[in-house]
Amino acid sequence: MVLRPETVFGSQANSAVEVGLVGCGGRGNWIGPFFPEFTGARIVALADVIQSHLDSTREKFKVEASKAFYGPEAYKELANSKLDAVVIETPPYFHPDQARAAVDAGKHVFLAKPVAVDVPGCKSILESGKRAKGKLSFLVDFQTRAQPVYQEAAARVHRGDIGKPVFAQVYYHANRPSKDRTQPGMDPGQARVLNFYMDRALGGDIIVEQNIHVIDVANWFLQAHPVKAFGTGGRTDWTGTEYDAGDAWDHFLVTYWYPNANADFNSHQLTRAVADLCVRCFGIKGAVDSHYGGMVRIVGDNEWMGAEKDDTFRQGAINNVKAFIESIRTGKLVNNAEQAVESNLTAILGRMAAYAGREVTWDEMMRSNERFEAALRLRW
Image 1 (cartoon, rainbow, N blue to C red):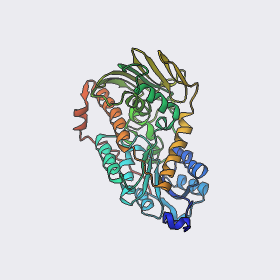
Image 2 (cartoon, rainbow, N blue to C red):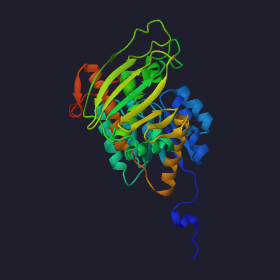
Image 3 (cartoon, helix red, strand yellow):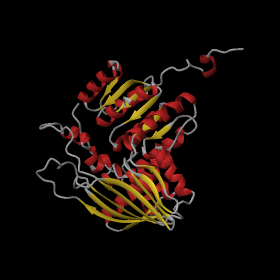
Image 4 (tube, one colour):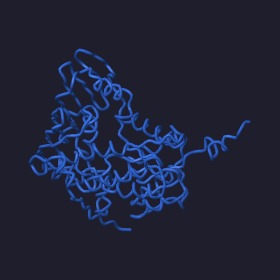
């Protein structure tokens, strides 16, 4: 007996997965096209708090006007509309509430990193991830974990090619972002949203919002999270320059103590002259030397050249988009919420230690009930 495909799978075979995009800014418009281009999924709904972004993105993806939701509650309207999955590309401050709304509505979740800006937010994401398990896919977009060369490097470290890792060098050196499309006379709330990566409350500071990429790889290679950290850092005077935005720091220096290794972490956004995102782990047999968007290799007794230059940023995102949509089509659900939260909390631990200028333990951080309050006011 031959059954029609729709009888077997419960719905028409090869029908397009329908996706809603929350966040129509730069990142949303960059990653959004990957869904139709590489998976055949359709973007059928949008939500944003900036009308001009919503309008231009609606035109780009040819979304019906009735499915373009505007305002602070727009993400809820989108999550409760007819679609299969919600893609969240908004400032991290909003992620916990938006992810919870999507899971509550029975929608699969594709979430930008970081997942939250504070410990309560991380715990909320962890709870949403647990409620999704076995029912929905919940994928946080860490590009390095999706790249085969990084996967192979991690496997070689874990099998002992460099010996037992005892020390790690972790850094994120980058140029300071200039103000993003901020116009004179713009609503202050909208200006903050546009520059959320430089806003402590909306982005979590640079160690959480951006530096988490390398912190995540350090946790991955070392197969643990730190037990404590000591840190420092600060913010340079950018008054009168195009880089005078927000209240985030522009450099951090943190020592992380892992159960079986120590890690030196540092980051800056001071000059474009030297830029690199690097994680190196050392053992008595050698070292893994990995660079986001660059070389990935092992040197020492078991030398291995993984890549002279890896397309981590773009290809990693594409791989995650493909894996996410494939999981919906096949029912082989994916969920990395716990892993994402662990790396997010590691970044928060470093931030807490640096802000306080003292040693902070993992357990002390986990007891923190401090919530970042954005006090964001937007004109509607």
